[in-house]
Image 1 (cartoon, helix red, strand yellow):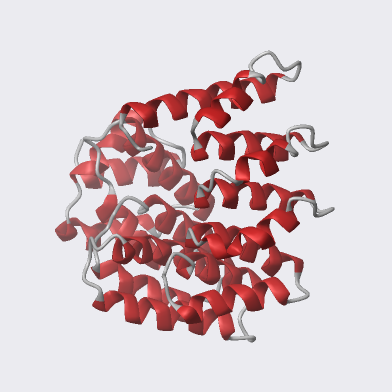
Image 2 (tube, rainbow, N blue to C red):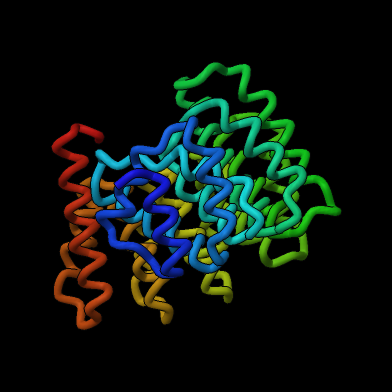
Length: 303
């Protein structure tokens, strides 16, 4: 089915088309976008959002389907739900041209949720800089942009915290200081993001703080602290994480189990082996997944 026919079907029926017809949108090119945008705007916003979500599912299920031309076009959609979904659907696209696009969205989009999604998307490029997969010169602009947003008190907290999380893997003193400022703030959301970001730094200097937060009354912070310890990967953290295996919050217990699996080693194996018969099904499943992950990493000679 041609692109125009798929779009006309949606406009005329006002319903979600079949997956087979949606798959035809993978044929779209930049030359089709003027017609696409003209017809797309006639579709009800809620349906536009549902279609993009379905396209992302189709792309995940079949690597031959590439809807990125459509997703990029939808970054300018009038509905913020569609713009946010478009950003999220482009997660695997590493085109450096999108850095400027996301930076503009972060700066000027009227919707907080879309700005936050753009900040998260820029975090992907921070990782690419740190892994030296894209030119280091992009790191300077990313650092200035994301730290600028974090320090901008006029920005919504949700946007500021996502900007901090995005820049956290960058090994710069200014980034470490921003994490410390967020941690010391009186805003619970910034504190949670700071703890999460400590793990993203992979810096063992944060271990004492994270060990302390394992005992925080707030389950969300205990959860993030456990995850951060898994990211940093210190063997000394295993015994600390064992203390969370009896936590009242099952999500925290699962986070501790996953972290132990990520750290790996003989002690981790022993801890996980004791959990495969746990009476809680979620804990058993988490333990089995962690054991599987650990074995896969051993086969790859990660440790």
